[in-house]
Amino acid sequence: MLLLVGLGNPGSGYAQNRHNIGFMAVDVIVHRHGFSPWRRKFQGEVAEGTIGGRKVLALKPLTYMNESGRAVQAAATFYRISPAQILVLHDDMDLAPGKVRLKIGGGHGGHNGLRSIQAHLGPDFRRLRLGVGHPGDRDRVIGHVLNDFAKADRDWLDKLLDVIADEAPRLAKNDDAGFMNRVALVMNPPKPKKPRPPKDADGAGDDKERTDDGV
Image 1: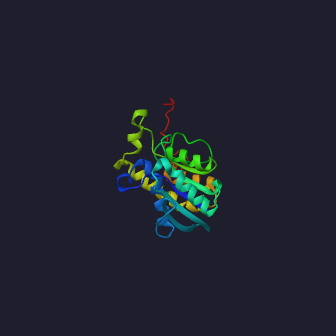
Image 2: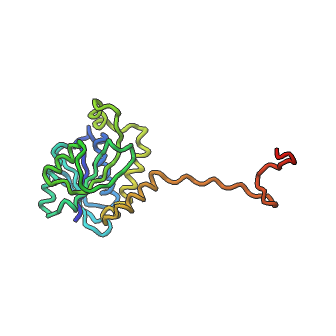
Image 3: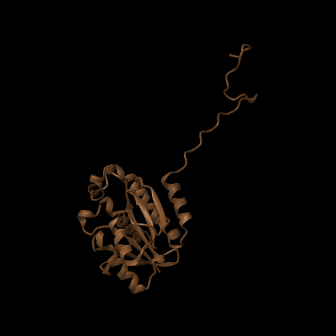
């Protein structure tokens, strides 16, 4: 079983915060793949479903961000899920808005939700890092993550959440490279090549006729 954890803070006042992009992503995945309704359990909300032929338990801790590890540990212990079978979706200020990275293990980078999970389960779980950008000033960090996404963010945010849900089967199958390739293609599609000008009958194309003086 895959334990799919979205990080955020509970309550309507936090729902659209940058810090809650993990909740947002898991909500879209659960809806897109026809999971069971959310129910209270493990100090959080859980929903069950199948993605890519793999059984998945989605979890949104309701302990507030700083205590996320309590809920994750409770679910992992009950279902005997190892850290390697846990995927945590969370906001990341070190990535530009709309950028995504997948990693296994490592530090918490100052993220209190990751810090709490590591304190309860160790560092060896997968993380899907969802870029929300940095305000450029350390004193503005808390206000940045605890403020709502701006209207200008909705285009890239909606596109990102959609592609994460669409490509969730690759996450469930541990096809991290395939997932990242698909996300990159959707978020940064290649620019169409400009058509080449048609050639004249003599193959000169649109080149201007040269004079005897080479002008």
